[in-house]
Length: 86
Image 1: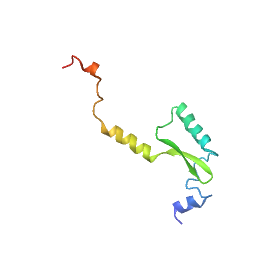
Image 2: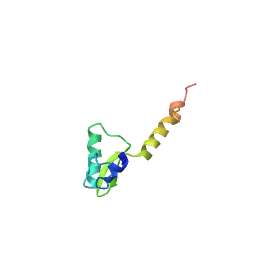
Image 3: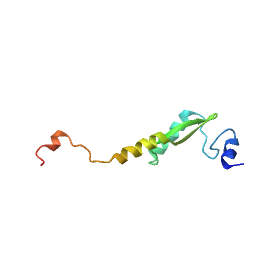
Image 4: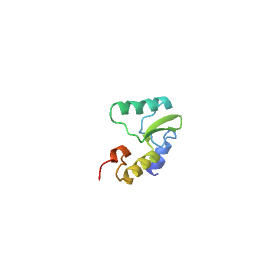
């Protein structure tokens, strides 16, 4: 039996070692507590797994953040900030 199959076999949960939140509100509160403690991430999200909820990093949000940072370039200056500079 592979490791993935063993993980799915435990109560239908793919991540049996992760903390199980009883409700979506509890999972969102956990993310808020992480952010208050300075350990949060803009990529964090909640997802349902069987009858409970987990918190984790959203692949979609993570990819969007990386793409924004890779665009690079200089930030545009406002028109008032550009006057007289040449």
